[in-house]
Length: 276
Image 1: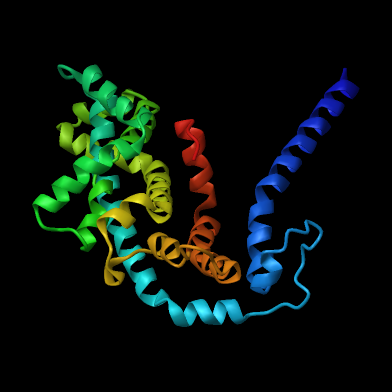
Image 2: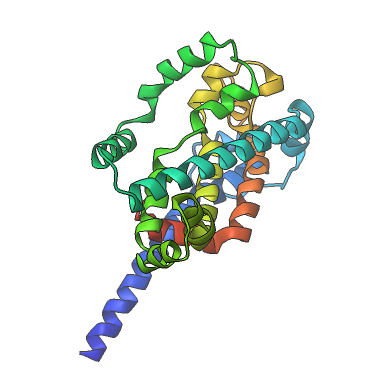
């Protein structure tokens, strides 16, 4: 039996390693392409994997063409504001849906789950009309607007609050705390890891969002990284080394963020049972 368990465990490891390698192939291809010439990048020969000569011209060209400092700043401002708003609203809503009893609670939470199940593209036209009516197109507000509230964050925080024992609330009530004090001083500090995980997820979702920034922001001064990368693709052809070089530069903040908060990132996935 032990031998069979070892074989099964080894097979699982082999499958997981193969899956990891398959997921890393696109990133390796991106890195290799960034150091090639455009003719090498467009070769059909599948055996031409490594560049004949490692060139850095693509990085120099995209850095000179694109104002990465401004793009980083726009993206950072958008992400920070989205994180603050998402964590604030989702924490309060998650506590209300997870710990409080009020009329229509299950119905309203079902609407939130419904929002998670439908494609996000459905909300683009209403959001665009709302932002246009208040005259905030091509502004930082238009980038932040879709992330002011988050259904996923509400669900994540609700799961976190439901995992806490009810004895904590009873003890707080005996000590004379009202609902607001119980939430602020007792329950919320116990969900810090989930709040950090929500912040990481919000940053990731905002960083890779493409369709909404392309629609709501057409000016370079308010464009985030994702939209700027899409703009450098030509209509009839693309310089793939420059495109891959720009993608590598754009990936750096998310890689750094993950390295610093990988524990909370994994805890968030385990807590919510969700996937990216």
